[in-house]
Length: 312
Image 1 (cartoon, rainbow, N blue to C red):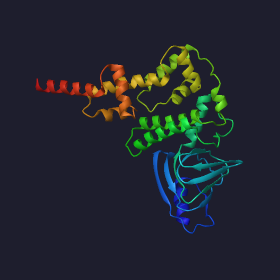
Image 2 (cartoon, rainbow, N blue to C red):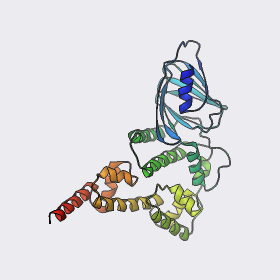
Image 3 (cartoon, rainbow, N blue to C red):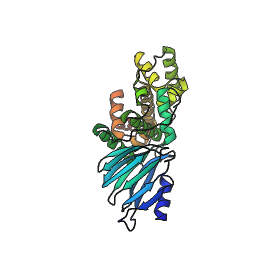
Image 4 (cartoon, one colour):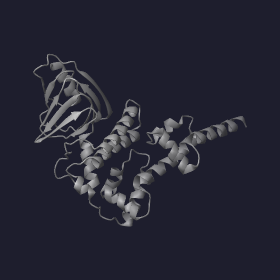
C-alpha cells in the first residue's frame, strides 16, 4: 500500500489511499511519460477497489479518460462517474476524492497548471480574478473525439527528441483545445466579442513575428509582446484582412524551412521538426500549397544541384 502511494504521489500529488471492503491487495500498474516540465501522460490501474483522498488537488489538473471499468470523482459539491470511453476534467485546488472499482483503468493528460491558467489569462487579456475551474461533467461526444485525436498526436510525439519550438506548439495546442472545447468558469467571458485593435498594433505584431520566428513562439507570446489579449490580436488581424498571427508565423517558418531544405544534408523530418512542424503529412501539404512542390522534391533537387557542382 505504502509503495503504491509513494509511486502515484511522485507522478500526481500526495494523497491518501484505502482499500474497499472486499479488496485484499493492490495490483497496481503505472506508466508515465512527460511532454515537458509540468505536463505529461499517465496510465494507471490499481487492480483493486480503492478510495483515494486527494485533499485539495494542489496545482494539478487532470483530464482523465476511463479505458475500462467504472469509477467516480467528487470535487467540492460536484460528483461525476466514469465508464469506459468517458473523459472527465478534474480541476486543481479543489477538495477531491476518487473511487475506483477493481477493473478501473484510466489514461490521463496532466496539463501544466500554470501554463493553462496563463493561456486563459492571455486569451482574456487580463489576470484571472479566481482560479480556473472546469465543469465536472463528461466531455461531449464531438469534443471527446477531438481530444482522443489530440492524445494520439501526443502519444506519437512523446519520447521523440522534439525541439523546444515543437514541444511548445504541442503543449499550447492541447491547452487551447481544453479552454475552447469544455465549459469552465471563464467560458462566458471568452465567448464575448473582443475589443477592436488599431492597425498600428497589428503592424507591430507582424514585426514581432518576423523578428522572433526562429524562437518557440506562441500566439500568447505575440499578444503579450503587443500588450493585447489573444482574442483581440486575432480579431485585429481579421479586420486588417491579414492572415491570422499563427498563419503568418507558419508562412515565415515554411519559407525558412524551404531555405534550410535547399542547404541541408539532413532529412525532411529533421527540417520539419526544427521549425515546429510536428505532423509530417500536414507539413508536406502546407509546403506544397505554398511552393508548388513537396519538401522532398525541394530536397532532392538541391542535392542534385550540389552533386552537379561537385562534378563540375
